[in-house]
Every structure is written in structure tokens, then in C-alpha cells.
Image (cartoon, rainbow, N blue to C red; front, side):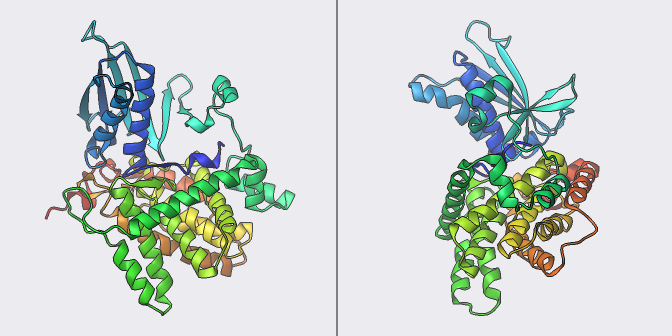
Amino acid sequence: MNSILTILRIGHGPSSSHTMGPGRAAAIFARKNPAANRFRITLCGSLAATGKGHLTDTVIIQSLEAPSLEKKVPPPHVEIIWQPDTALTAHPNGLILEAFDGKNSQASTDSWTVFSVGGGELAEWDAVQACFVRIPFDFELTKKSEEKGITEIYAERNMSQILNKLTKTGLSFWEYICEKEGNHITAQLGKLWNAMQESIQAGLVTEGVLPGELKLTRKAAQYYAKGKIITSALRTSVFLFAYALAVSEENASGGKVVTAPTCGSCGVLPSVLRAMKERFRLSDEQIISALGVAALFGLVAKTNGSISGAEVGCQGEIGVSCAMAAAAAAKLMGGTPHQIEYAAEIGLEHHLGLTCDPVAGLVQIPCIERNALAATKAVAAAQYAILSDGSHFIKYDDIISAMLQTGHDINVRYRETAQGGLAVIQR
Ligand code: SF4
């Protein structure tokens, strides 16, 4: 498996698969074709079905125009073609990028078919090997890895193998992560934790209406204000709601967030980390180690399952975010490795089958409330797990397999196409 940093990416919302991924693809393609004066971008399947609400076209145009704006030359012409009914076989989030020069306006000078597979990650489909080939993030492109592709950091491929390793060596999850990733991981996670706190803060102090036709009013500031005057046991839940709402509302308005594991589900983990930090007076170092453990559970889910709503529905986004946050909370409550794994398993198991059906294709309803509720479920899952002895029937690896199978069996209307469920309710 690759670095846990591939799960946590700082970027702008509202969607890692429909905004960050396509934006990154367009930026790479623009850099590769500096002489092009026209680009044609064909969005297929889910990218076309919900792309307008997710600002896919806006971010693609901005990314293709950025090099020209830097050089102060006229930007290229960009044509976006929407093909919601064209599903490329490898993945529902396919895009075809074509570049043209001034000499021949009909034949493209370069063409690239790439897939946005979740969490801002891009991959090409290798038809011969019948597998995806990941496009590395910039931080993975060290000189060495540029020559030979992406470096694998973890020899273990799933949670059972990791737990076996921990049992044999006596390492904790965090010690295992530090051993594999190297000393720099603490500083890198520290930056991500800072970015998460900034997005909470930005969401708590911003009021008004979210962009888009739904005219939804932001709620985080109200919940936070009420949380401060409540003295009962309800208080922690109110703050969990407020922090998750703050980050999710920032995401919905195109603000800066950290994928955890995606933009649509970015509110759950920061909310749980901040609420735990305040409730138990924890240090930033303790939170950073919990963030690392959460990312490891997200990485295992991405490697063996999926974190793409278009591929497996919302169970891959909110379900995985809840598992990550539950693992972090269980670690912060002093859980053993098996209790931490149990907490993550519970967090995902009880989101199994969750559909992706955003109203008007906007990452707002049901996404924002879903983050708030998943944050409370993550804490409950951690409490449940640490009250046990850590033994349990369904393992985290089992629930990931079940999620993948269930996701592939869910009708395509419920996988980020805005064609079924809540998405078709009219007002
Ligand atoms: S319903 Fe879930 S998977 Fe779909 S866009 Fe919203 S958060 Fe993402």
C-alpha cells in the first residue's frame, strides 16, 4: 500500500472525485500541452450526471486556463461535453481530455482518458493487465519514484495482515505507521490537522446561504452557539454536530478542506478529533497520532474496496469516514489494536448499503447532515468497542469486501447519478 497521506489531501470542495480529481487531471494535461489553443473535455457517466452541481466544469476550465493566466497570454478555448449516458467500462467517473493546436482544428494533437477514482486520486486503465495504474500525487514524485512509478510503503495489504504484524512485534498502530512512513509523517500530519482546524474555524464563523439552487442556510454557527450554553451530557453531541457542519458547509461552498477520505465526507474526522481534544484535554501530538491511525483505516478501505460514491454509493464515503473517525476515537480512548479495529468495523458496518443521491447534484442534501450524524456514530462505535474485549465476528476486511460487493450491486441510479432516491424529490 502507498502512504497514508494519499487519503488526506488539502484542496477545495465540494467534491474530491468530481472537483479535485478532474481539476488535477486538467492541470496535468494543460502542463503537458502548453501550445494547445483549444481543449475538448468529455465528461462521462457520473461526472456528467452530477458534474454541474459539483462544479466540475468550473474547476476544469480554471485549471486549463491557469498556465495562460500566469504567462499573461490569451487563455485556450475550452469545450465541455456532458455524456451522462456514456459509461466507460473501467469506472463511472471517466473523462477524456483532448488538445488541439491552431494548425488543424479537427484532429487532436493529444488525448488522455483518465478516471477520477475517489479522494482526488486519478488512475489510467491498463487494458492488457486489466487493472488501474495510479497517477501519483505531486508529493510522491520524488526523483527516484518518477523513474519506477509509485513506491509501496506498506508490505501489508489488509487489516488482518497489519494486526498480525502488531501482535508479533508488539507495536501499536501509531508506532507501526511511524516505522513505515518515517519521521516526517508527524510534521505532515500536523499540517493536515492545522488545515482541518482552519476549516472548522472558517465554518463556525461564517453565516449565510450556501451556493446553489437549494438556498440552504448554514447551521454550524448556531449549533456552536447553542453548544456553548448547554451544560448537560448533550453538549458533546452538539459540538460534534457543529464541527462536522462547519467543515461540510465550507466544503459545500468550495472552501478549503482535507479529504477524509473524500470531500463529501470531510466533516466527520475533524469533528471527532476536535471534540475529543476538548472533551479529554488532549495534546496536538495525541490528535496527530490518532489522525495517522484513522488514515491507515481509510487507506485499507481504498486499497481493498472503494472510497468513490460513484462506484459504491455513500457507504464508501460517509461509511469509510465514520470507520476512520471511530478508529481515531477508540485510539484516543485507550483502545487496544483489536478494539480499534472493532470500532472501525462497526463504523462501516452500520453504513452498509448507504446510497449516494445528492439533491440537485449538490454536495449538500443529504451530505451535510450525514457528516454530522456519522460523527456521533463514530464516537458511539468507539465507546461500544472499548467496552468489549475486542473480539468480534465480522472483521474490518470482511466489511470492506461486503461494501464493495454491495456497492457494485446497488442500482446505478443510487451511485452519484442524481437519478434516484432523494435526488428526484421535487419541491
Ligand atoms: S451522498 Fe454521500 S457519497 Fe454522495 S455526494 Fe453526498 S457525501 Fe458524497
